Image (cartoon, rainbow, N blue to C red):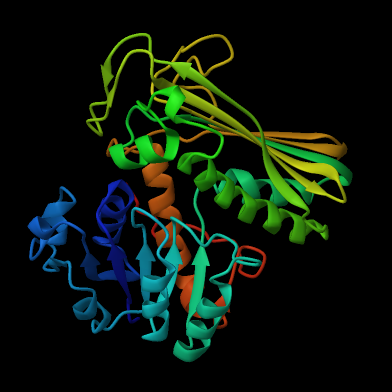
Length: 349
């Protein structure tokens, strides 16, 4: 059986783990790697990922990569770049994105990306852990076992000491940035609100509701008690700056709340009462208020190779989604359109 050829866009924590998963995969193979850093140009992708050479070298040249025969590109850049994603789609390369485009209904880039999909006979799908698993996938799945649902609540309690990207921790969580510089209109708030709006619209569409609005209804910080450096990412967090942040996002339909998402991220345990105290606490929790009332908890731990659980989860989801993305009808799709992915590589001990 012909293996599916996969392009990996960027070699951050998730991208490196994807490359590791593709090595020896029975149904897929690495076709190319896109990188930001010119120092990585021409370096073997396996060596960039901490494993043996794979015979595929990384490149900063997008045009060169677009010419590579491939079935799917996995987008895990520093930010959502629909213009670059559009170019893959028009070239006939399907795309799975883990860093944006989770649910594009109502978003300004939808028309251009849909046109690109039709022109290239390709499909765009996106996902992640949050936005994604905890803010839309699991709530919708669990709601299928309850009647007369009145409210959905979801929590993430992310412990990020082992996360490998300083950029995402500082820009995405505000770690180490003084509170006085983090106003309600700050980039980090808008970034999360942008993603949660897409999750909320997906849940609303899945439940047959009309989404009115999504608001940040609470935000609080936990400050570092002392200077600290996260060894996995090298991020320095000065004493008195945020080492923990917790947002509450509330989505409304017909003026009434229907979805509440609490997103807690910490760089250190035991930052105070009410904050995550132990590494073995569940990462996620979903509650469905209905008949019956359902509570579901889910945990993720580092894999056998020690990879950070969040990076490993997002990498595995991307790889496992490839066959479904390739097989799907052209267009911008979501979990409301595609079958749920399952493991694509069972490795016997």
